[in-house]
Image 1 (cartoon, rainbow, N blue to C red):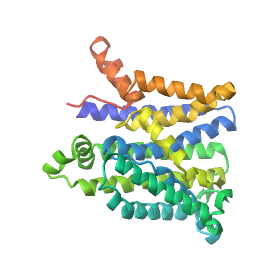
Image 2: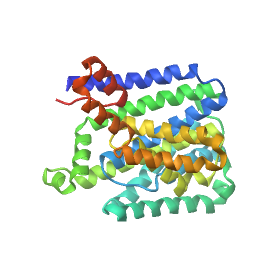
Image 3: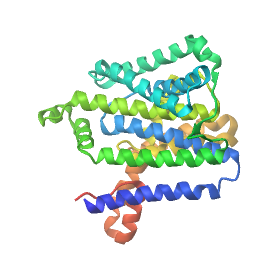
Image 4: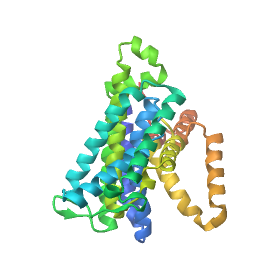
Length: 334
């Protein structure tokens, strides 16, 4: 267990080093903007991976929670003068409460029935945002004021980069500790066999609901901050397409992998930016890359790298194996 914890800490240190050194190659505001967007998506995907990858519960409406968090901050700060931090926390609490109320009946479903129910929830949220134009601005969207913490306003891309980088590290650390806790072991048991987990004394309904609420809260927090960063929010961020993008990031990076969520968010946020030079063929190449990844790396990027590392473990020096495991966020358990 000590070796596993050491490797896990090495992974967190490696991520912190990447965040610390990345500004050396971020030469303009555009690159900072992409890096910040990766951070927002990674935070949402980590929460979504806890739900899908570890608990085995699909959600096709998570963009709705993201959008609700964004609009909560926009409305509370713009219309009622709330401080941004309080508005963000209130939005997270409100979304968490909604997830709790909706999750109790929804999470009784399984398989494609659960997927359809979460899709329906996301569609309802999106329609409410569009139709309540007095509060939300309707299809045209709504402006959002700047974000400040303890009187310090995040006014430029560099400040936002360090703030989101710190939040991403905190999210990864909290998620890793959750997975290593008794609750995390219960979630993995549920994913393997819900009947077997219940026979072992695990309260399946309670654990599924708790992780659903936590995942929705992560999405709401990221949505709130993203709204303040962009200064404008539209209903598209709460739409079905955004939900599919988030799930795709989780699957591409690798389910049941915290660092897989981060890698998937980075790849699918960065790749479309790179492929813009192809103009009309951008989406064709992006689709081909994703298909090739799923064909040759069916478990996702990070778990497939972990499996490759395991295969070559006996042929590589132990010190190099430990470093590779740290980078992909996996260590050998006793």
